[in-house]
Length: 404
Ligand code: CTP
Image (tube, rainbow, N blue to C red):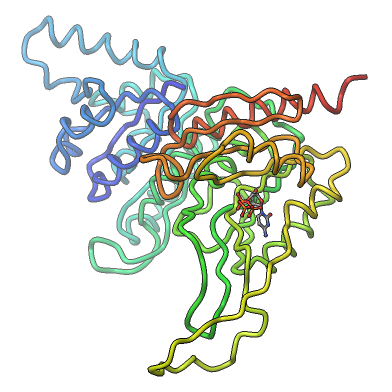
C-alpha cells in the first residue's frame, strides 16, 4: 500500500518517525511530507533514513522558477500515486486549513488534490482540542469522509493533563492499514487469536512466565482486522497497544486463557493459538509471600490444560492453527503437534535463531499444513508473516472444508 505521511508542526512530530517505521514494518511504501513548522521539530533526514525515500518539504521553499513549477506539479503526482494520506500530528492549524480549503503549502495543497482515503490524527493542547473552532473543523472534516483518530488523554507536553496526546504510533499504523487496505478477503470471518505469555502465580508477588512478547499474535490480529474479519484477541500480559478495531480480552494465567478462548469458540470461524502458554502451574499458591530461608527450596508444579488440544477435539469444521516454538527438528515437531492436537496448520519457528522469534520484530517460520505440504516463509516483519499465514489459512480452508 502506498501511504503519504503528512507531519504537522507540533511537539508530537517526533512520534511521526515511529509511525513511519511502523508503516514500513507493515510493508507499506511511505512518502513523508513535512510542513515548514514540522521541520522546526524534526529533520527530514530522520524520515529519509527510515523510509528510504526523499522527503517532500514546503511547496514554496523552492528557489528558482523551474523548481517552483516542478514542485507544484509534484503534489498532483503525489496525490495520484498514493492510496492513503495520514496526517500525524494534525495540528489545530492544519485542521483549520483542511476544513476551509486553504492551501498555502505542499501538505495543504496535496490534501485538496487528494482523492484517496484521508486519516487525521490530531494532537494538541487540551484547550485547543476543546475549542469550538477546532470542534467545528473536526465535525466538518468527519462529515466530508475524513477518518479522525481522536487523541488520547494523558499528560501533555505543556504540563497539563487531558485529551490531546497523539495515539500510540503502532495503533495509528494499524488504523492506516485497516482503513486503507484494499483487500477485504476476511469479511464475515470471526477470528479468535490468543497471544503473549501466561503468568502462573507462585505466591502473591511472584510468577512463572516466558519470553513471549505477543508481537506475532498482535500482528495477526491487526492484519485480520485490516482484511475485514471480526477479531477477538485473548491476550496474556504484554506491553503492546490493542490493535485498531480488535476486541482485546486480557487474561493472566493459562486457566484464564482457556476459559476466555472457550467462551468465544462457538462464534469463531478461524482460531489461531499463537500464545506461549505455560505448561505447568502451581495448583495452590500460598496467600502470603513466601519468605526467604537459607535452605534449598522446591516448588511443586502441575501440568496446565492443553488449550490447543481441547480446541482440536471441539473444533468441528473451524480452521485451527497452532504454533510450535522449537529449538530443533522444526518440521517433524510441527507435524507431530499438528497430528496430536488435531490442527489444520502449525506455524513452526526456531526460537533460537538470532533476530527471529521471541521478542523480535521479525520472524522466519515454516507453515506445516494438514494437506501434507510445508511452506517456508523467509525472514520478514511479523506483520508480513501474519499476512502469509492468513493467505494460507484461506487457501487451506478451501482445500479442506469447501470441496463441494
Ligand atoms: N498450547 C496450548 N496450551 C498449553 C500449551 C500449549 O494451547 N497448555 C499451544 C500453544 O498455544 C501453541 C501450541 O500449543 O499453539 C504448541 O505450543 P508449544 O509450547 O510449542 O508446545 P507444547 O505442546 O507445550 O509441547 P513441547 O513442550 O513438547 O514443545
